[in-house]
Length: 91
Image 1 (cartoon, rainbow, N blue to C red):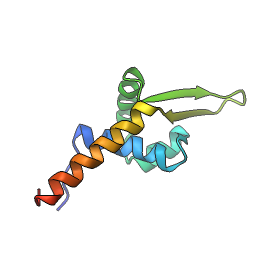
Image 2 (cartoon, helix red, strand yellow):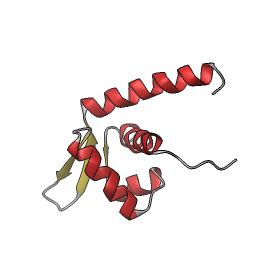
Image 3 (cartoon, one colour):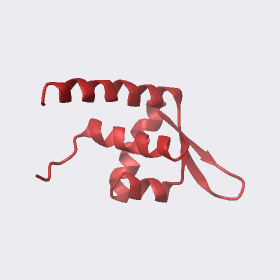
Image 4 (tube, one colour):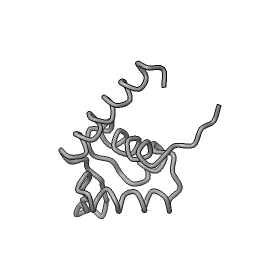
């Protein structure tokens, strides 16, 4: 079955992708890892930046990176607990 991801799952996927790359990822890599269109990714990144779950870093060489914050890591941990809880009931 091919179910659509909801907003929370997409946010989890974005934050997890950043975390798995050592907490720092280039936008292009994030685009592929989170499986999003450029427009949708920009929308979600804007929201995550506003909520201080990620930060944007522009390096001197012109490269841009997104890094996960403590708040973003906390979201992953709490969401993972909820996922495990619901799965334990077969949901």
